[in-house]
Length: 112
Length: 115
Image (cartoon, rainbow over all chains, first blue to last red; front, top):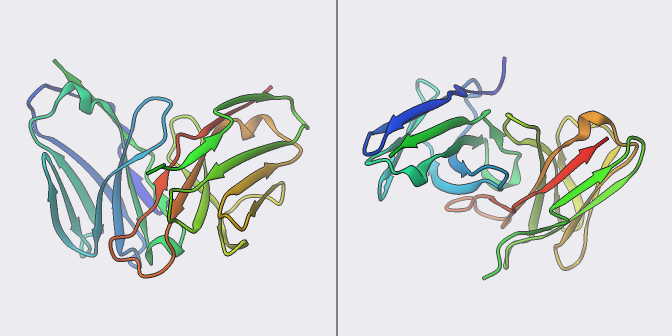
């Protein structure tokens, strides 16, 4: 079993839709949770960073962490064509002193 | 504020050859991690350098080695290249210390093709 599971998609939505991206994990030691956006043939760009459980909002993006269910989500409101990319979840037991474990990424296309 | 910079951006090597990839961390960061990302996969941790020493290592063979210099920049070396080493190699920098509000930032990566 992989440490982090993420549905690879692809996911296709119309412009303006609410997008929900999810990851599950098996290691209860994970405390730091990140979402990265990766455009084709580019390096991952940090979108959201959350410690432990709870919600965090930044503009059109909301990250949720449910440690009891070992489940994290990223919501994108009012999706735009520029949001078309691969979204990677990542997590770590103790932050930057440890390796980060990544999902395989979900490919998202927002159709104008 | 310069972000994480990597070089070269693309390179093609032949099986059995050796390759060196370079990384300069984000200004103010002192820790460098290297990841391998195969096509269609998430990044896989290779190793991390802090204070010029390898602090942690993922499940990669000894053909993969690295170095960190006093200015915090880093190199990744891969010997005896295999076709399966073809991937995007990502450098990530971070700041050691309290993790609150602290995470890793990636460069644009070096695309390695082994033929």
